[in-house]
Length: 190
Image 1 (tube, one colour):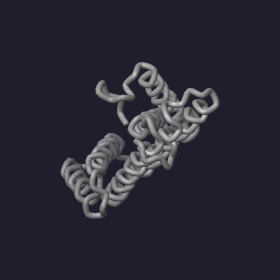
Image 2: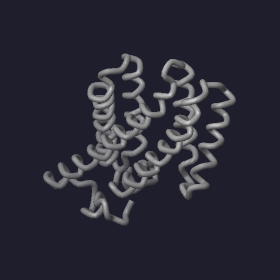
Image 3: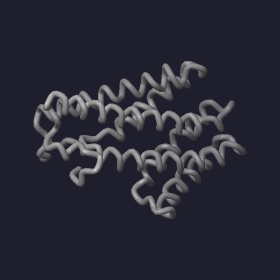
């Protein structure tokens, strides 16, 4: 859950903890994408991957595991939709503005058709980034959907790992973010 001024979790301590979690998760995902995953890619491609992984982490990490899990599934679902659409297009055709428009439209349509309403905007944004980057680097453009799928998975995993570690540290130190059920993966609170 995003911390807002009207939220009961908006206390300075909770906000500080949440901001540290997001910062550390972003660092972990950027590092994993640029140092572990992108070592055999050109520098610019590695940096793009690090940025994409960090964005995925920021998108996914929430104050409770349950909400993070829900958002992680939505993020991966939207990315998979974009992956399929962009790979099918870029395997045969180069970037074109009309192709971008077609795929963005399909990225909004497909989630609703397959029972994933709510994933439309994320799928469309992902498709836009993949297609524009493919247009900037037409040689091997078909690789962009594969790379962004991997970067998204790294970012989602880094966000989840950070949340689990911070939760465990909170248990060890007695400084959890509320009742024990608040950060439980099976909790109904969110």
